[in-house]
Length: 400
Length: 65
Image 1: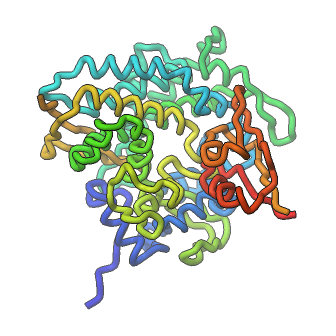
Image 2: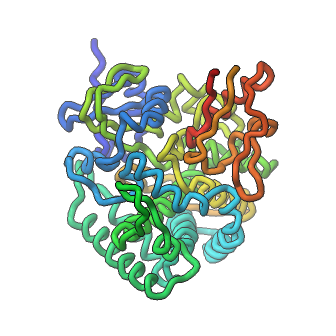
Image 3: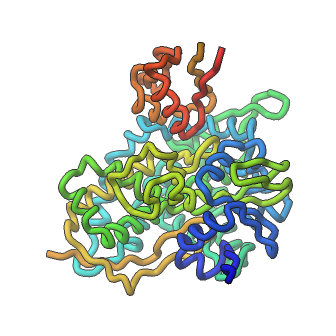
């Protein structure tokens, strides 16, 4: 009897519910997965995904980084995640100094205050970790850094949620996704125009003042559309991800109470726990690239001119790279392989240090707030989204 | 002789390398990375290779001369 051929659809209900079983089958049976129906490739083993992330010349981002964009063949709007060098390097260097581990220390008090604020408002007998806590706080941090006034900060995450939502079977953007993009774009554009008139101590104002080299080596300023795009991206990347990581953390620690106990006994293990969460339930599932030529990866040849899924979330559980890769263990040997939870290479997460800090402080306060807790597993609801996974509802009761 | 080479255009001061081998990599107070000793020796080679691999930016290389 032959095994049924593994099928991976990034927008199937089966994938939204549990991507990890599909990943395991892809790694074992089809490491160089080709989807005939949608005409794309997918890499799932650690050695392949890591190699592809490093090889940004062959695996281009310039056509976009989701399937819909890459296969449309249209030139995407100017955004740092849709750029190859040298443009990418110019844009990235405008903001990267604001996100180094040392630089984000200046956000530490704000992060702690926001975390304590939202945790202070929940009902310990019945609250939703995502809706009441891990959704609201990260978006406040990043939009505050960007320069969004307080009254609009929560709106940003609702736009992101609507923009990334996918119905089962839906690859391309629908009207609702588009409308959310238009609404948030209009809002940010207005804010950029306002900041040109009236600069503040925020990222939008710094981008307005910044200069980058153009194609002829002359210095130029960014236009309003470019700044709008960058600010939109910051809001999405800086909010959605930590929201999901912290929501998944509460679920995984409920499934593995021995691991929660380790943290209760020894808070110095929190950074290691954050790394393990990024590996085991990191929110970003994949990034799509475009093969500009035939490319050799360890599992074979990816042909030219195809969308290629680099499945970091699968690579992170690859038992060929990590001993007992499917086991959640905050004490594991982290030097075995590169953790791809925040990407790798030139497009690796700009906000990595901020994400780590927010997650670590959130875990620390959750350990205080709910040393013992139970999750209502029947009430868990996962999100259906383009390239990020996690929960939209995690109902919790603190035990006393 | 092999030497450590850092692409400072890529480096974003994540400090992973310093965590692995502070005798070779050091971040100053301004967040700039300094290579304290650029020669790859049998004593430090293993850790330097680990830093090369773990650098999230892929900014470190070993150049053979």
